[in-house]
Amino acid sequence: MGDRPAIREGEIALPHDPAARTDAGLVFIGRIRSPWARGNCPKNISKARAEKPDTWIELKPEFAPALAGLTVGQPVILLYWMDNARRDLVVQAPAHVDAPRGTFALRSPNRPNPIAAATVRITALDGARIGIDAIDCFDGTPLVDIKPWLETIDIPPA
Amino acid sequence: MGDRPAIREGEIALPHDPAARTDAGLVFIGRIRSPWARGNCPKNISKARAEKPDTWIELKPEFAPALAGLTVGQPVILLYWMDNARRDLVVQAPAHVDAPRGTFALRSPNRPNPIAAATVRITALDGARIGIDAIDCFDGTPLVDIKPWLETIDIPPA
Image 1 (spheres, rainbow over the protein chains, first blue to last red):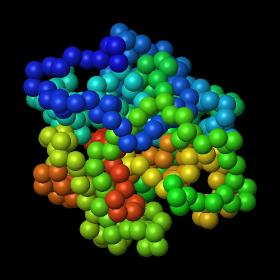
Image 2 (cartoon, rainbow over the protein chains, first blue to last red):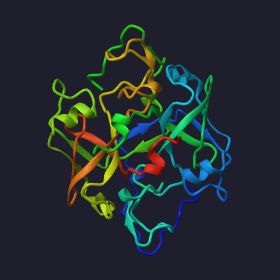
Image 3 (cartoon, rainbow over the protein chains, first blue to last red):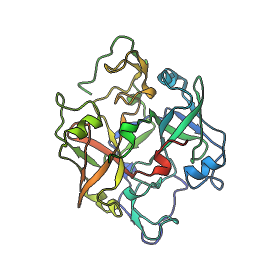
């Protein structure tokens, strides 16, 4: 957290950092590999996708058996841990919105639990290395989960 | 974890429990309220939705400002913590599949990080109480995040 964002005008922070008192523990199952770092990272996954980057997952070898049944071309949801985020902001003013907005109305990485979610396609499967079509996070971002994307769960009801 | 599922034939567990050595901490931001408990819980969200249940989120009051900007009718992704799950299974044999399958090819609650994801619609907003159209988890399930569902991030690329 040495480099977390400063508070901007209109933003509201909790009086405490949620990270200081947690209720459950996460394990990192691997890392996301991407060409992105501070300074060159696309603002969102659509922009990342347009650049056709070489992006993949390096899963910890012990979890490789958990990939059985996934196929190349399949859409999956990735959950990943935005480890440079602030966890205390409840209202935020990101540059791309016109007025401050609640954290739960934004996809900002800054949130009580800085877990990002993105739906991607598997482009390759090679042991514990999983190619994906794109991602918009820094190289080395910790991965928390891989789930098959399912229309019945992941498309909003009518 | 007093009531976690037993291992079935064909299932593979890690030699250790991932929960014993974690890399990051989660805070529970509230609880999901539903009519479901062990014995009457629908198998998936489509079945839950068909029963038109009374389901809502009880957010911890400190997080209520983070709802600003959400609207009734809007689709959101909920991330919630399946606190009765096993975290050590890498291959599983749930009753509804014909052969054992890797954990990351399943939406089973049993996974290294037992975070479930569902896309629901907001039906009411009243302070820290948020009505939702349906959910398929037990009453009292801890909530981890609320995110606006966005077509550009949450629909698989072509």
